[in-house]
Figure (cartoon, rainbow, N blue to C red):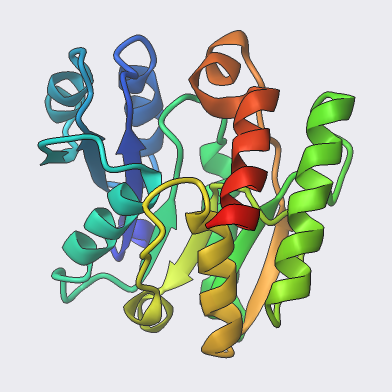
Amino acid sequence: MSDYRDTWLVIPLYNEASVIRDVLEHAGQVFPNIVCVDDDSSDASASIAAEAGAVVLRHPINLGQGAALQTGFDYVLQDPGMRYAVTFDSDGQHRIEDARAMVDRLRSEPLDVVLGSRFLDARTRPGRLKRAVLRMAIWFTNMTSRVKLTDAHNGLRAFTRPALEVIEIRQNRMAHASEIVALIGRHRLRYAEEPVHIIYTDYSRSKGQSLWNSVNILVELFFK
């Protein structure tokens, strides 16, 4: 664990009471520093996260995932010992092994950002329609930024401190993912992709991994 005391996990929290304890107990075995941003959850998610040892920040109203991430970024940047930060979803779809590998790459390679990609290997199997919508989002993001990716809307990302200091999210909702990519290009940050396994469960689909959620991403991209 001592190897990752300079790293923070930033986790937006949305009515995850049924899974958040397991997510945090698993994550805490590797990363001792975790901040959960409760974006106006209506269940016991925030209390459970606090009991599990996470720092919990609360929004008084629902602002969206982009705003939750920025609140988390502002908090972890106050820690002078923070060297790396990882964005990590609270619904159980991300693997802590992947997050650890991404931080290790930041330690060992001349990189500022490592972005997870579900399309660099065959482990993740989204449905055909979801894959098509995600491919369209990737095309749009690649066309409008200096960054070329295989997966533009993966919530698993790792940043060095200097990189996080120039990431200022203004898109509060799902378009924040493309905004982060655009900021990586604008500031000419050194980046790489890491193959990750996204675990699609019935629960994670119901909490934002549905096809309709992907369509909403496209709507926000084209009409923001």
